[in-house]
Image 1: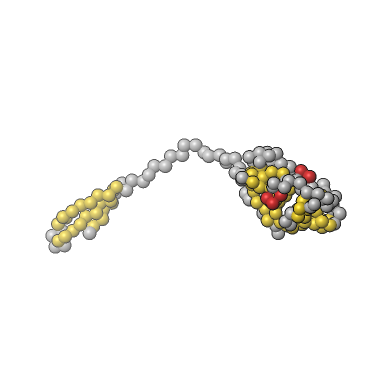
Image 2 (image 1 turned 45 degrees about the vertical axis):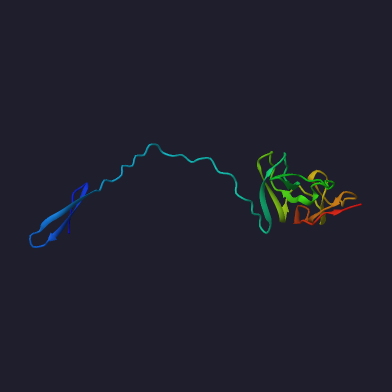
Amino acid sequence: MTVQTDQNYLAVLEVRDVETAEITREYCVALEQPVVELLTLGEQGPPGPAGEPGPEGGTSLQRLAGEVLSALRVVYELDGVVRILDYRDAAHIDLLLGITLTAADPGIPVNVQRTGVIEDNSWTWTPGPVWLGTNGDLTQIPPADGYDVLLGAAMSATRITLDLQPPIQLE
């Protein structure tokens, strides 16, 4: 077999009779290189959505807001969206999800923390238990009616450790 090449083609010649060097078949294969054209220089696109939250030593997740939500509010999840939870909300008290870390408008992802430490410089806690209050607020005053939902404990004036407990109905 003999191979002959030029700039654009490769010819493969099959020789059957070595003594006479008679060529019985000839194959031609094109070696054309693809033409690459640069039409325009690309630019950096907009940033993508934020990834799943991941606080150190805690469990967080991302869900869609079902209403306008502020950060640091207790929420429940139903039908794929989260809403504010109140300590008197018997219909949703068992759906407690956690505490929002971010604010969000309806239909926008919101980060919710379920366990671990949350810190906020605007807090002025006294070390001790933290409960669910009205309209998703956190409080250190235990409820007298509705449901007792212990959320965790304040470790300092600006830091709480979440340890969500099942609700206890008060009479």
